Amino acid sequence: MSRKPCEAAARPDQWVLIARDSLLDLPKKPGDGALFTRLRNPSTGEGALFLFSSCAQQLFEIKVFKEDYHSWFVGQTVQHDGRLFFATPMDALFLILYYLIKAEKEQGKFQPVDQVVVDEAFPSSCILLQCTRAMQSLHHVTEEKEIGSKKFYKYNKEKTLKWLKKKVVQTVKALKSNNICVGGSVHSATFIRSKQMLDVTEEDYTRYAHGLISEYVPEELSADLLKYLELPELSSPAAQPPVKKRKVSDVLVEAEEDYTKFNSTDLKKKKPSNKMTAAQKSLAKVDKSGMKNISSFFSPKSVSKK
Amino acid sequence: MMCENQPGALIKMDLGSLTQTAHDPIHLLPCEIQYDGHAAVDKYFTPTICQGVSAKEVSFRGRPLKGQEIKIPAGYIGLVVEENHRPCSEEEGRTVCMKSTFLSFTQWNLETLPSADDCAMMSLMWPKISEAIHRPVDSEE
Image (cartoon, rainbow over all chains, first blue to last red; front, side):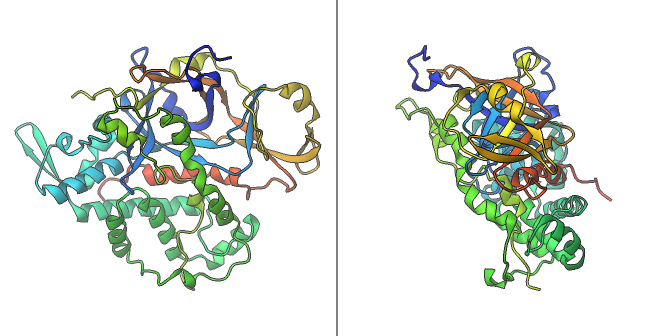
């Protein structure tokens, strides 16, 4: 089979992916295409895999759904790797915000945004500046000054919290309209749906949405947002009610280990060589936090005491 | 402004290959098959699928499976992408191609009847939730 001396060339690597159809909008220039690349996860500061559509108009987040002991049939072939990848549109402002906060801590002055979004370890970060919609929404998280024809920005925490609160509110709406179970005691889908109406409080929804949004902001800001939303801090995990069977969270515990494999078998296949640049070295670092298993989003982040 | 093109850091997705993709039937099996490559799915698996009372049924390696059709959410598309050719040098750019597209797949369980509780089914809620998180917020009231 192998025509080339590469050890990995013998077998094609293939993935099953569910993507927003706008990803497939054809590029204006032939030869252009969507781009997978690594960027800094704004919550952890570690590298994670992202996808830009052609011309970088839209950023996509890559998530993995993985259950143990699964494989695919694709037409007349077997694919051993049973994971299901998702490419969903992402608000690039979350990624830019990370750099704005960093710049505020380090320099604390008004700056052009292209001087702020600079990352030696993740050179693709500058592509974020081409995401038109995010660039037009910088005012949600910054103060702006215009000098001559040039715009200068400075991170503003109050505006950011206000913006994040709106994100929480629209997320709560989606959780409700899609019947997502946010309560602690999950027995079965049918049971939840009837029970949900009675037991689940507005606070449960807000807390759950806060947990989802926190995956995209630094920890400190997540804590500030919790206060801003006037959610009381939880005492301890012991506050969780005893639960016989928690179907969704059962899955996530066992599934969570595996999401780095896309990176380890693929992006990090290259053996480190002397020629590696600093950027490549950091790309080769193990990433355990960037790509979370999807099912982790369906567990209650924390359960409030009833 | 120029972005430095780091060949190791970027993987291009060849959208031109989309026009030639197949629409293969896709099945998610509740077992790990330690193999990648050709299999006579149409000869031995597909013909034995039948519609049972409450689920699709099939026998695989002597075990009865129960299955359900899972539709890809509206506005989304299922893709099988592959990297045929892994570059041997760092200078060579990497590309993945579209191998197949699909709008639904069949998810198989070992014993349990398929339901909305199945994890694969629940994972398909992610696009909707994600959309709420990442949609631009309503502008100033």
